Image 1 (tube, one colour):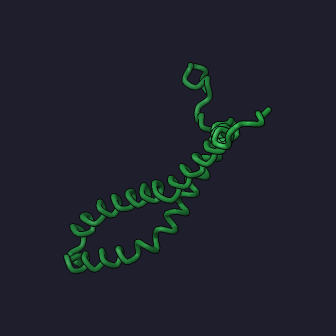
Image 2 (cartoon, helix red, strand yellow; image 1 turned 90 degrees about the vertical axis):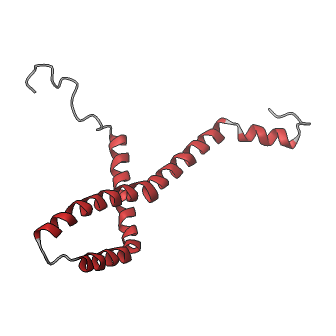
Image 3 (cartoon, helix red, strand yellow; image 1 turned 180 degrees about the vertical axis):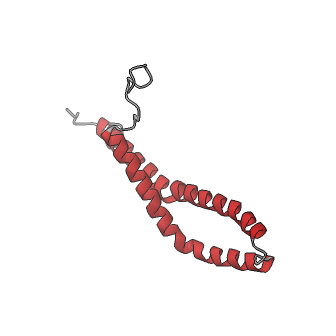
Length: 124
């Protein structure tokens, strides 16, 4: 029960530190963290993986075929750099799908791939 002569600053402080406010801050923090993972970290991870594959494949292609000259490689690199802004949306969608699969696995509880009796000599 509130006191009649309570100053407004104390009422606001009580509202901001209540259990409901903490729960709201936690939910908002988790949503922001999920959005950062979907928009920044997952696309960056996927792009890094794709870039490492390309960096490993280009020297192999250069050694196999003499048609790859520095001019051809530069033209291909410029063409790829022009496509990067358009590729960010599919990377974000792929990040969203990764996050969705992660959350569904966490909700369902199938994060344990092996049963408890695995490797205990029961032949299963």
